Amino acid sequence: MAYIELGVCLTPAITAVQWTVTYTVDDQQAVQALGEERVPHMKAALDRVKASLERVLAGSTGAVTFAVAWTAPDSATAIAEAVVVSYAVQSAAVARDKLANQAETDGEPQAEINLYDALPTPTIPFHYDGDTVESVSSVAIPSALNRHLQLQAPGGGNDGDIRFRPPSSTLKWQFWKGKLRDGHALFEASAIHESLHLLGFTSFADSVTLPTSLTSWDLFRIPESSVPVNAAQFAAVARELRPTTEASWITRLGTTLGAYKASRGARTGGDGFNASHWRSMTRLEPPQPIGVMDPSSVSGDIYAMLGQMLLSRADAEALDLMGWNVNPNALVLGAGDEIELLTPAVAHAARPRRDLEFAWHTTSSTPDGW
Image (cartoon, rainbow, N blue to C red):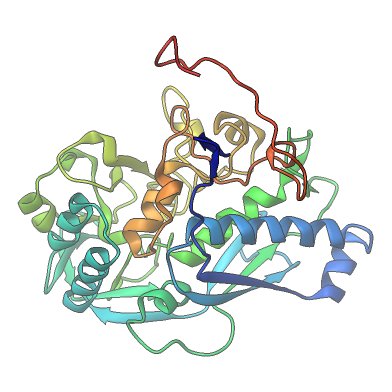
């Protein structure tokens, strides 16, 4: 896009990418699962995922590595799954202060800083089973997010593993964006989904044992009955980890606009989806996709209803609140709840050493504007 003023061409400032992600692939394993001719298409899709994530997190710092494996996930029903390699455990007080201080340094909105200031400390109340209120005093930060927050010195090796189920008679992977073919799963959407789990979308609500820490996702997971809440209520309300009770993930205080329905979880009578997700679109009435972290986000319906975009404003807001410094442009609404995270189409970009061409049209806001 270019702007013309008195014959001078002005172009918008571009934020330099400071955060990088690297996907490592076992080539021999990939060839065995996909066939040699399809591996380059898979890697090209991973490159697009890398570019999308780096664009969203352009204000963050650090470099993380995710290992991609073409092997069956532990879950018998999953087509892909993410495994966080390690967590950095920090006291709730230190984590809260770190988030608040960083938000001020990054110039985040005051509403976000107020939310950090309202996080409970030194202990965090939560429900795990029944009505008994438990409490913890620490927060577990996934390795990838810790590289940015630097709450502890990062360890070596990968920051997480992503396992993709090899194709079969009942599962075919589509390595290009576009309308999903019948019987196919959109690899790019699945790769972004699993990557976001490694970046922070992870909950201890489905742990088989009582957790001794809460994750950065769990900090903002509260009962739907408590939405909206003021700062004092937000600090006191028990975080909702009971799969039998509906929960919301909250990004701001005092308004339902920042409350997104969260999956109930798979343990003890939940909705069958892990609690590290938004609510499935198919379980909302009317069906409404929240973001790529919908547990069924690789389906054609999700992709189509998100406007053929792979991340929503809700996904970007969650990453921002969990501690990443999200590129402000990623939070600008396009139409409805869509956000534009893609580079301009090649046809709309000026080619080197060629004159710019402009198409003039009236604006919708001012009839005489061009």
